[in-house]
Structure formats: C-alpha cells, structure tokens
Image (cartoon, rainbow, N blue to C red):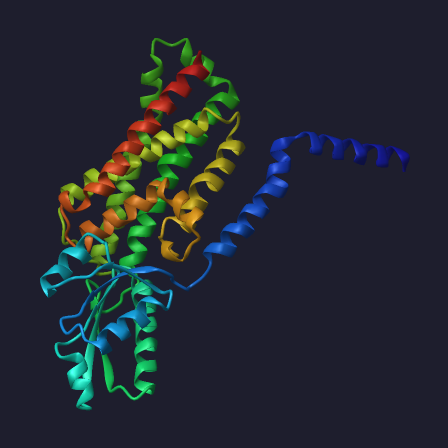
Length: 361
C-alpha cells in the first residue's frame, strides 16, 4: 500500500509540474464554460437597424424611441428614401429596416389603421426572425395602448427563410479551416515528431520548397472541398449563386491561404501531433464556431468577445460567401472583408514562414 501511495504522489507531482496537462485539465473547462455561457443565447442586443420616417410626427418619433430604448436595436442609419435601403442591406450595415407610412400620426388621430413595414436581412434566417419578433412585440404593446397599428413583414434575400442559406456558408468556412489549418499543423508536427524533418533538411530542397510541398496538397484538397460544398448547396439544397463564381473562387483561395498560414504557425509552436490537434481545436475551430457569427449572432456577445471575433478569419469570410452567393455582391461591396482577409494572409504568412525557418535553423 505504501508503494501505491508513493506512486500516486509521484504522479500527482508529475502532473502538477506539467503546465500543458494543467492547462488541459483546468484551462479548457474554464474557457468552455465562459465561452458557452456568454455566447449560447438566442437573445440579440443592439442590432443595427435603419428607420425611414417620412411623417416625423410625435407618434412615429415616440414609437421609434420605444424601439431603440428596448435594448434590442441600435439606429445605424436614418434613411431619407426607400432607395437607400438596398445599398444598406447589400453592404450589411443593417439587419432590419422599419418604415413608417406618410401621415402616420394624422391617420392614427383619425382612428384609421396604419401599417408599419418591417424588412429584415434574411441571409441569416434565425437572426431575421428574432428581430422581426422583437419589433412586432413592441408594436403589439402600442396596439394594446389603443393605437390601430399592424406590422407588414418582408424577408429580403431569403423570403422562405431556408436554413441552408446560413448552413452552407458556415460549413464551407469550417471545412476549409479544418483541412487547411488543422491538417497542415498536424502534418508538419508529425514530421518533427517522427524525426523525418531532419531528413528533408539534408535534401536538395530549400526550406520554402519544403513548406510549399507540404501545404500545396491541402490547398488543392481544400479548394475541391469548397467546390463540392457549393455544388451541393446550389444543386441539392437550392441555394442561389447570384454573384461571380470567379470572385467566389478567389475569395476561397484567399481564406485558405490564411488558414494554411495559421496551420504553419501552430506547427512551429508545438512538438507533436497531439499538441497541434489540441491547439487547432481550441484556438481555431471552437472560436470559429462560437465567435464568428456562424451560429450565434455577434451582436449578442459581450464587447470583449466581439473584439476577439474580429481577429478570427471566419468572421470576415462568412459574410463574403453570403454576399457573393445570396446578395450577388462584387469586389467593391466586399472590399472591407477582402482587405481584412488579405491583411491576415500577409501577416500570418510572414510570421509563420519566419517561425518555420527559425525552427529549421
């Protein structure tokens, strides 16, 4: 028994000295509880909306203030004409538009029924439905106060509210990250773990050639996967492809370069495949699912998590896919997202290649 207790104490000391093990045992559960606790919610706060109020009377202003003071909505644009709606929706600056009719207060004073239009961006059908429900609930309160107001709802870009409009872009984002980043990091870590990296170093190949040789197959496979997801989304699930196929392909390649650079960077920081897999899962896949807006709206997250989400490549790539496929946007309409991915690709590629060369040296 004494030998067993001594062995158990030795194992405890070994575990307590191993920072990586302690991080897995305690850091991962704490991180998961905090992330899921803050992110797993269907409530949306401070969603960007636009209000078109041609009457601008006391009643319409009061109802607008009631909408904005609810905490669910944030006035991003106060538009003056219905022509301004389409550009606002296309560039993604608003999620919902509230349109008052002319002579709103005057008609209410006469007891005549009036209808307010609620137009939502249904490229994310869950968010669109939630925002419509919020606005309708506030309008129902006005009805209870004796105001004969009805709400006329429109779902822009996805009138049938098909979940596939959100599912296909999200799956493509995850697959490209999984194949390009995780598999690249695991492959390079395996070479170091098995000792075959030294064999490659004494070959006539230069370091950048070794790097290209290891990553190019995953770039090609990722592109095939992206094409397959788009094909299934369009021809099996009926998702539209309103934009340029060439632009979509180039954007996918840009995102894959970012993912490959992240995979190389992870491989320079770990010693074995298990470490590469854990860091990829915790540092890439989980934030991509939780913080990029793929499943849960980013508006409902605390500000620190929204800030973290801005450095996740999927946060910028997901709107690109939806913009090209659903809204038919061109490069001009996606300039900000493309620029962010381009900067990430350049930044991560530079530090990844530099780190890889340092490890080789």
